[in-house]
Length: 351
DNA sequence: AAGGCGGGGGT
DNA sequence: ACCCCAGCCTT
Image (cartoon, rainbow, N blue to C red):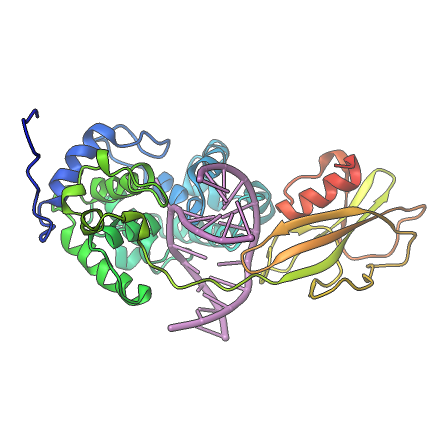
């Protein structure tokens, strides 16, 4: 539309017309992602669910290869339900938040047992690993239910649209109600995807591109002039440093690994034997058994709530010691969480 | 309401 | 060095 002179300033006191403008933009600029079939076709609930779980707190570039790996290997929820626990944990290795993988399998088995997916957000939320966001997303996208899907992107978009300045935890509740109110009758799934696409490609965290934004006319933060100021969140706590050691024990070309307990950090994953990881200065590490351990170096790894500095110790053993765990040929080691993959690589390849 | 829980990329 | 991300679960 060409106009001469000054653009009309759309009113932004009322968001009721926002969904229509956003959907028109989505029809032209929505992303083509592997778990989205061509616009207008019905989404596969299994793929929608799998993608939503994988993309919780995870970027699309990081998650996409895992999505393909899983759908190639387990094309249906029934196939996934029949997989062994260790197979799924190994396939998930490197993606993080490993409770997601344990809950993924629990959920798949519940669905296979039931024989079908529940189709409402309320019912979906009862399944393991499915919280308020994911329940809304699956209900809207896979089952065309009138549900909102409010994730971090939508939080940010609406924090700006409404220029929310109050306590962030409280504002998020208000915001959620507002999004639900705006879900359009006929296209709840497209609305959910459109808001996410807008947040990912236009209303980005540090450099929102208001010039190409289809809903900038509704945006109070843009009107104020500094949309990137929003959302206004409370300061984060500093991360403590923990230190410890990981042990690479080698006997006749095999390395000793241990399966970690289901609860807690890296739960359910294979790992190297370690000392305790403790906050503060370095102290003498405690090996899993007596051997001539050689210090190879140090790896650093950042977890959600602490930084880890891990001394890597290696021993080539003349006899197989009595130790918990299982032995794996060096060239068949797979499925380690990143911190252990780093330590293993350093001990074997020196880098 | 707060904290545990991964990992990688952007600036 | 700091930020962020298609959050959920437990306490």
